[in-house]
Image (cartoon, rainbow, N blue to C red; front, top):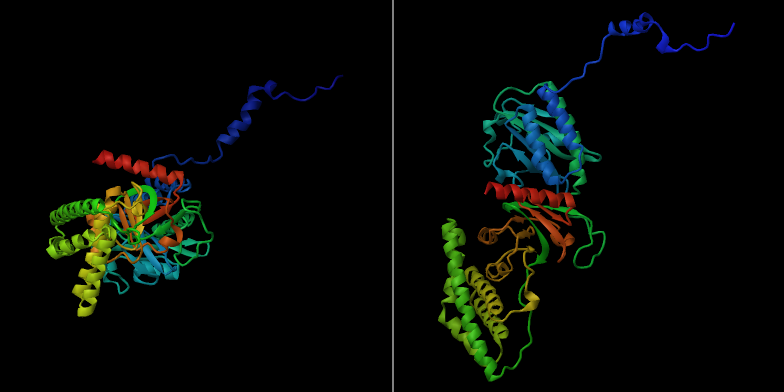
Length: 462
């Protein structure tokens, strides 16, 4: 009798085929957690967001917003370890004024946030302003949100920052502490990949003008908000010129050009003084009246005209006037007022040279990111003609006069950028983010796209 062969499961009886399914239906089934649990949905959405490569600015903007919503917090702040690894700087925030970003700074171990990073453990309080470790910042007004939780953001070799959430009431639970600590670990990768540069590091390679280095992110203090991209251009002054003999026809033309330069400078300074008044800068812009006085000093006009008439040329004539004023100030006494006035005259003489006789070597490219140690009135008279889109100054650029001039310049500006000239060269493409206090040299395509989206949103708001 032939073998029946293998059994075809499809020819089995209906009863036989139904048996295993009936048995399975009696067993517990796994539960798929579909959307509807607000906290779980928020966590999964945050993980999906943080898993994507993104510009640092996107992380700084979006992470605090998402975390605040997830925890029902009024405030969420993201601090980043910077400089020599001992300073915490608030680079992202929702809940406080945008002016706090880049300005609120703590040493590791200072305040409850600093303690969290020092001990690499969470720190909580239900009445933060009453705690001995509390660090008060007038700009924040955070006494409105006394319920406080800070967790360290840990990297591979130590802390890279801190996450802080605050609210007006309702203490944070253990599950909140655990979850925020885990989210901090997710954020650490994004901060690390931004390559924030320690200003003490030497440049690894020498480069030609016009770029060629990898992307670098430098940090500073925001001063005039906004974001812009352009080629880096160092602030410049007229180049020194040799003395030359001028013909009579040239002398007549020089005198005409010099008078025209005085007129243009006088009108421009008065316009700046009016703008300072409209911005309510008051005493901060009082130095502009000194420039008005200098330009109205007849002896200044006559001495410059006399030297031009002698055939020395405008650059040399004005340079000599500036030297004479400086020598006079030094010979009388070490009077700070006279010394400052001498510097103002020198600054104004440089501007008059550029207004009268264009020096190609001192001209700036249009729509550039200007970099330097400080601004002067020369820059508002001359550098501004190139329509710069942003300014980044070193840690020497924190003086009151420079800050007033930055307000009058009215383009995105950051100050206190350490290591600026170690990493930036003329011609490098740079993105100045004066909302967070960042200067990105050779920004990525993602960062450029984020800037375009920012501009689109801003234009829509306007």
